[in-house]
Image (cartoon, rainbow, N blue to C red; front, side):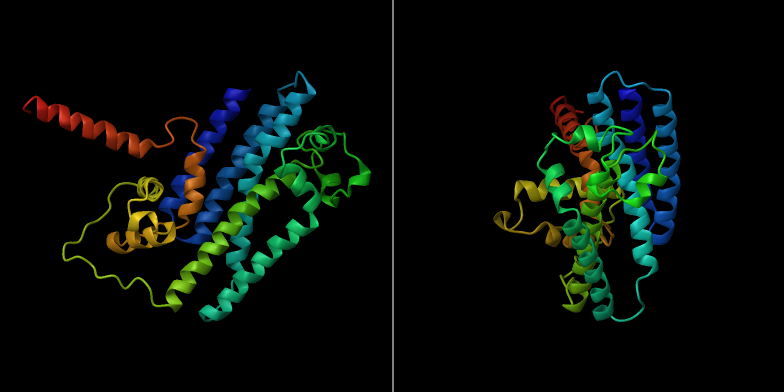
Length: 282
């Protein structure tokens, strides 16, 4: 089961990365992502129905660590769709106020779930047997009404809350990124002088994002003082490309099970081959 779930999650991450990079329209992107996620979760449900956990620890791991990686994506794209559908028409000031209000809503969730948030983020386990075993709920733990309508064969009292925590991290990144974009427009940034020769980035955007993070980590710009945001905007300007939610894409890159720095590995391999070919007089 573990390998099948790993493959299922890897396939989902690849599909979502492709959707994010290839579909520019936010509404269409969310709709397509939700379609893919729902199919994947149904596959996960089918897989679980054919599985019997050998121990409580196995069941806890599934509902605390594995299932939320799938459902958090569902929450993220669904919330993003609703946020953008309700975004008001108007100037930057109005839109900034709207996005800031959405950040306030995220903080409200954090405040309301502070006790569980601390429990989860601290890596605590002493309540796992109540939180992440099916049909082991404790009515004294202020359960959401939605839990009593959920499929108890595929849910515990708190696996959805874990997914919500993970999704909120991504939603916060998205909102903060949108505010930065608006702020840059207000300040009239992106005024760097463009070179006479135009270069077009023809590899996938995810490859440029991988390179962006590598260069920032190495500190090659401004003696390491350049912000990631400034480097990203510079790349967008000189290549006339929209990197979109590059922070979210980096989170997806980190979830790769093998060869996480795929583009950098390819650069290294091809450069070494070129050196070898040159040494041989090719």
